[in-house]
Amino acid sequence: MRQYNRDVHFTTIFFDLDDTLYPSTSGLWPMLKQRMTRYMIERLKIPENDVPRLRETYFRKYGTTLRGLQANHAVDVQDYLAYVHDVPLDEYIRPDPVQQSVLSGLSTRNLIFTNADANHARRVLRTLMIEDYFVGIIDVNRMEPYCKPSPEAFGLAMQASGESDPARCMMLDDLPHTTRAARDFGWYSVLFGASDPGTDADAACPDWPRLASLLNGART
Image (tube, rainbow, N blue to C red; front, side, top):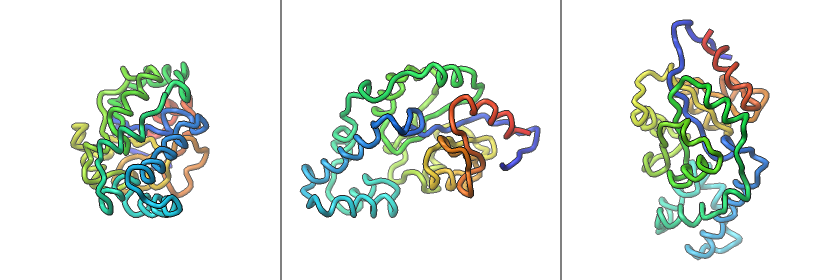
């Protein structure tokens, strides 16, 4: 685990949204991916057999399916985002009292940093009943034309947060390529939902109760 000077304290935590603020076992993210696939087939008329390959290619090259579609197809961004996120959230996710307790005890400024859009983020926060613990949302529209894990996206997130010192920032995300990028940018990166960060992050956080102790340990 990377160690920090005792005088340095985290002031800002950037939280990923999907599969981080709610359990990866919820089934919500697979449903969102299904809707991405259906959009490509139904609205963009891409042959169904080509979609899995294209989605994988776009994710790896551009960071998200959306950015790949923007680069290679005539896609209406807001129509895409509305279609993909048109899901009854309460059928998949529900409030977690442990999560609420941990978030309420944080003294940091907490922001959502997501490749989804702000409307989806607000709906997730409302459903989980944790909207009061976040001061802002940095979404895919705000990062235009970038997205995680590009360094430009991290720079825009810092501007939006008002934080000027990367060493005071923490990123909590379930994707190793994002935690690697956050670490490379100078943030303290935490791989959420994992017990071992490997070479992808500064630390791992398997569950919400671990977050508070992790924050204290990272400061010393």
